[in-house]
Amino acid sequence: MDSEVLEKFVQDIATITDAITREEGPWVASELRRLRKKLVILYRKGAVKINHSVMEMVCAKHLLKKGYNVDLEKQLSDILVCDLFGRKGESTEIVEIETGFVPPDHALDPVESNAARIASKIARYSPFAEKFALGTPPHNLLSIPELFLQPPRFRSNEDIAKMKQILDKYYNTPAISKEQIANARLQMIYVVNVDNGETREVDPAEYYRIWKQASFVGKGILNPP
Image (cartoon, rainbow, N blue to C red; front, side, top):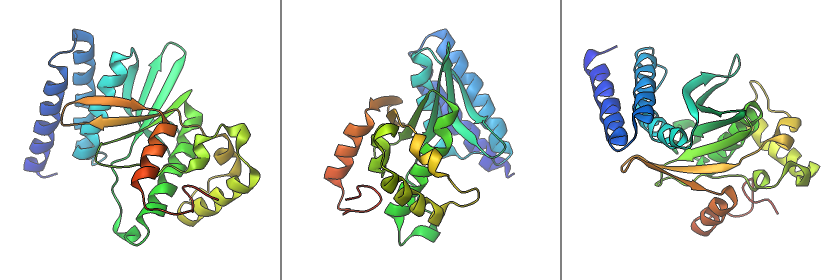
């Protein structure tokens, strides 16, 4: 790895850590410095990127202040690594960070492909913890499929089948099952503001209402008829 590139990552991750620990107690500050060291090690391996890592750090501070012990880039299975994993007593929480990046391959279908990406994360990651949340910056609006705002018992077989059809279009290695879609849960949205080092909690239903007001998207995967 280029030494200048590594040095820039180390400098940036140190800067955000110093900024968000300035007014925190010794335990939160110590834990964030521990997480910073892990991210540097992972960056050397090419496993993380700076824009994603700084958001993880800011969100980690929020969880630490809520009393969680936090790990970053935690291995959940042979194929799944979550962004943040928090544990407080018997309670566990997973947070997946979404920056809003659209791959060039999906330049012509960014809304649907991002909605499918979010749906796949909810379906795949939520079984591994008591609570599942998505984190995103204020300048990005998550395209959350309306299906996941309903409790599992209220999801119809028809809507689940529609969601699977969309997910199979984008994710089939491995495919996401109807059972995963039927039982997936989304409890919280974290709006992660790197500029001021703070994280705001938003109820997913309220977030969806904000998204719907700001969006020009018609009926489809996000709000089926």
